[in-house]
Structure formats: C-alpha cells, structure tokens
Length: 114
Length: 114
Image 1 (cartoon, chains in turn orange, yellow):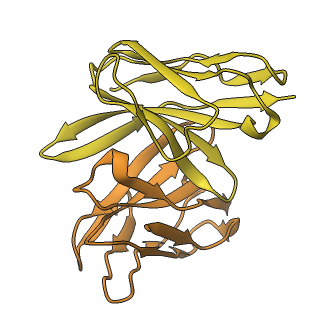
Image 2 (image 1 turned 120 degrees about the vertical axis):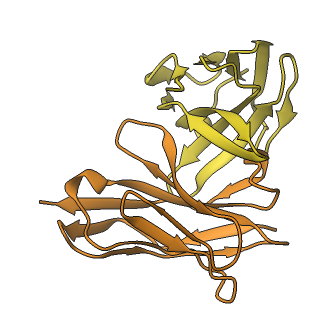
C-alpha cells in the first residue's frame, strides 16, 4: 500500500535557523507529492507540491524536491521565522492529484523561538 | 476566499450519545470530505461526497455516517459515540482545476467523548 513517513517531532529551532523536515514515501505508480501546513487554530492549507521526479515545489521560502531515487520529498527553509511555527504534513496522491487518494504522514510540529 | 466553516470548535459528549458535526462551504464545491486527525497518525479519511445525496466510504468509516442533503453542507454523524472517537475532526471541500484537486480545510472540531 501507499504510505508516508515523516521525521518525529517536535522540532524546536531559533529564528533564522535552517530547517529540514524529512519525508519519505512508499507508493505504487508515480505519485504527486505535497506539503501541507496547519497553523495554530486553523485547518490545513497546501504549502507546495511536485508532480513528477526532479520537480521542485516552492512557496513562502520553503522548498522540496521530488527525489524518485531516494523516494523522498524533504521540506527545507533557509531561515525560519517565528510565524513558521505550525504542524507540517507530507502527503502523496497516486491518482493525478485526486484528494480521494491522498495519504498523509503523521505530521511534524515545528516551534520557532525568537 | 473560500470559507469552510465547522459549527463547533470544541465539543464534549458522553458515551452513547448521538453526535452531529456540521460543515458548510460557501464556494459551490462539488466535493466534500471528513477526516479525523490523531497524534502520530496524521489525517485519515472517514467519508467523502462528490455530489448531493451521494457518499462514499473512506479509509475508516466504521462507527460513522454522513449526510449531504444540500451541496454546501456535509454532516458527520456518530450514531453512538465511544471514547475511541475522541479526536480532532476536519472537514474539507475541494476544487478541481486542470485535473488537479485542491483541498480547502475548516479549522476543525475537537471532540471529547467521556
């Protein structure tokens, strides 16, 4: 079956530190890959996505590259801010980005300290 | 902006009670979803609906039912609440653009079953 494995949290960083949240996946076929973010008290929202191997998704200073050879989609940001404190979910879809086929990881809590 | 509204932010119920969780979206989206979010497990799909009066089981439908009498409203029903249904419940609607489906989430209902 399809699955997504994220690094265990919580992750605590100081402002302006470099962020990496690891995500690896197992899937049949060629999935689309996503990062969702959930700010405190809010629902999830799409942060970025990549639909084929070697694609790089980017948004709000975050980046993730679809690595087929390592089945990974690690989230990175060069300099985090307090406002980046949130829960981050990696997800995949094996059906052309269909929401019905989304498989989510367990989420990683990020806290950024001033 | 798309708005997905869940009627309650926090809800406390007793074992055996019938519980209704309500969700309304204001963007005329065809598709609506109910997820539960648990620590260490991420999001899991309970039910979804692609049209009025239409419903399909997700990955964990046991103990739940749904109702979609109007396009904008999707209700999750716990016929007889149990303690293992204590969780955060997230509703979402989706928009399909160029064969890619984008999810819009509500801010969630934290249900505690005592």
